[in-house]
Image (cartoon, rainbow, N blue to C red; front, side, top):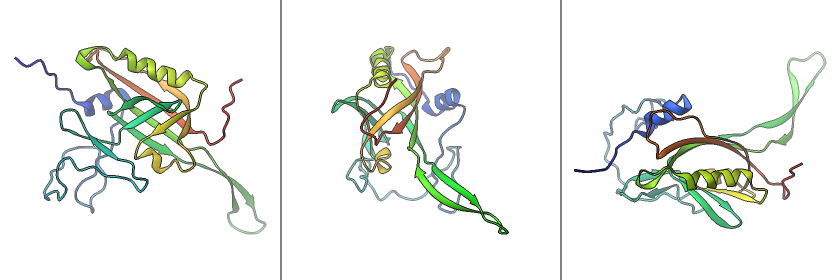
Length: 205
C-alpha cells in the first residue's frame, strides 16, 4: 500500500489567503481567469523539463524531485548564503510613486511632478512543506530568523529579480503564519511582505 499523500495546493491557497492566483490560458484573446478549467489544445513545442531564463540569465523555473515543473521559486539569503528555498509560493509586486500635484489657475486638472519612486513591495504567499510528514519547524525558524535579523538579507529568483535592478537587498516588513485547523500538519501556510532596501544601512531604533 502506498503511503504517498496527494494534496491540492490550489484549494489550500484559496482557503488560507481568500483568493487564488490567475491562470494564463492558451487563447490570447481570452482574459486571465482564476478558474483552472481550460484545456490545452496546442502541442507544446518545448519538451518537458525545459528551463526558461530571464534576461539576467536567472532561471524562472526548475524541475522538482519527482519530475514536476516548478515555476517562480524564490530563495532567501543572508550573509551571502542561501537560508531557504521556497517552491510552493506566489509573488506579487507593488510599485508606487510619490507625485506632487500642483493646481493651475483657470485650467482643468493639475500639473504632476514625479518627486520620488517608492520602494518596491513584494507580497509572498505560500506553503512550507515538511518532509516525511513532519512539521517544517526548521523552515519556520528560518523565516523567523530572516524576519528578525538586523543583517543584510537578499531575495533571489528569476521573477523578483526582474524588478531588483540595483541590488537584491530587501527588508521584511511583515511576516504572518495564519491559523490552521484540521489540515495536514506538515503543510504550514505563510505570507510576508518585503521591501527593496537600496539604502546601505537599515536603521532599527
